[in-house]
Length: 287
Image (cartoon, rainbow, N blue to C red; front, side, top):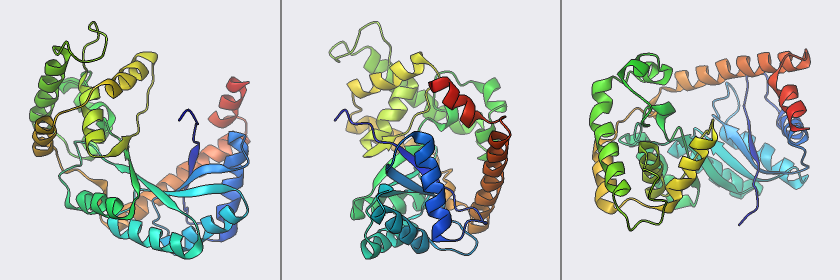
C-alpha cells in the first residue's frame, strides 16, 4: 500500500494525570501534523507516578470515540505491560497494534526482550524495532576511536571487545551477499553492515525504525529490502547478539527516564513558545 501512516507519542509526564491531559496532547499533535485524526497514537513508557497503563488506554478509547485517533501503540513496554494494555483495549474499545521498543543485535539475548516478543506474537501486536542499528554501533562507520565518544555505548557499558565478534560476523555476511551476483540489486552497490542488521530485525518479524540523516543512508536502508538473510546467518547472529536491553532496567530507572524526558519536553515547549524552538522552524521550512 502507498498510504502514509502518521504516528506520534504521548509522554505520561508527572503533571499529566487525567483523560483531559491525554486528549489535549493528542489534539495539539494532530494540529501540528495538520490532520484531524492520528492513525497510531503511542503511549510512551507508561511509567507514570500514579496512573497505570489501563488508565491511559481508557483515555485513548475516549479519544477514539471522538474521532481523534484510530489505534493505540505502545513504546518501551514489557511483556506484562503489553498484555495489560491489550486486555484494557478490548475492554474499552481501542485496538493496541504495536510496541515500539529497543530491538537490535545489542538487545536480543535478553530474557525480558524474549518474553515481550513472545507476548506480542501471541496477542497479534507488531514490534517496531527502535534503535535497530544501535546508534551506529552496528554500521561500517563505527571504529574504536568513535566508540569512545559514543554515548549509548558508554550508557550500556559496551566495549570494543564486546562488539568485535558481532561486527566481524556482520561484515562477513555483508561481503558474502555483495559477492552474490544472483541477487536482484545493482552490482556496483555493496551490501553494508547496516543492511545486514536491518534484515536481521526483519527476519525476527519486526519493523525496523531507521533514522536517516542523508540520501545515502536512505538509499542504503531501502536497498536492504531487496535481499534477505538465510536461516544459518540469522542463527549465527542470534548467538553473537548482546543482552543490553532497556526492559531489564529496574522500574525506578524507567520512571526516572520519564521524569527527565518530561523536563526536556517542557523546555522544548517553552523554547517554541518563545520562538526559539524547532517546531516552528520546521513548520516554516515546510511552507
